[in-house]
Length: 259
Image (cartoon, rainbow, N blue to C red; front, top):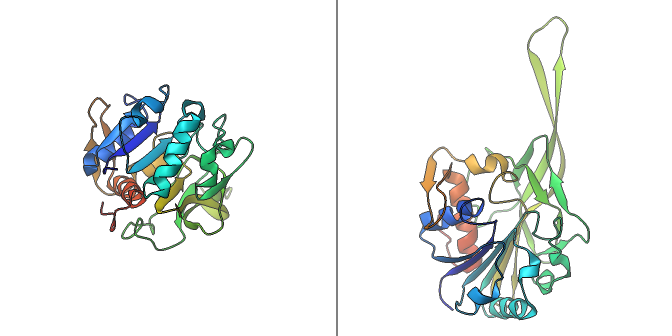
């Protein structure tokens, strides 16, 4: 098992996959990529990943042998990270809740469509101290546009919540300006981490790419421009890049997971 990452999903490197691929390239994390319309097996037969990242990747592209290989590798110390999307967790037709991976991820999935699209602010709220989050400015939280609804498994740790907020605009007849009233509402798991065997597992239930990632993609005071080989160029916020770098490195087993 080497230090490489096997990243599967997010359509292709010319579109949504350019985001995580760009962050990995910027961070110096080597990876092998499998597009959403390509089965995992042929790539898995020739690599020994230290981390599996499944992001909006169709469950139909994994064979029983692929599932067994992933589970065995995680038991022996590899990491597994699932990132949200229409074909992640349950999604529109992902249906990972019926797959063998449902037993090792740190969340319990819905048995029906779990997609939640957000029209009003949904803010990222820190719930615990952790190496992935250390030093990131959650006092200035980013917002997201959607996520997959899950529940944390017993023994797993919820690091981030997605906090729904209702915004009401109140105007007085004799004034041109308006008062904005923000009322915090439901909070749901956004980032959950755990372990299986000797490996680390993580579930980030929003997307890494627009549209669900929302304003999170621009989180940070500096701009990061990056491009993976064969991929489209991306421009993202520095804290967005640092967060996903740390998430990947922690799940891979790096301590500390420096950005």
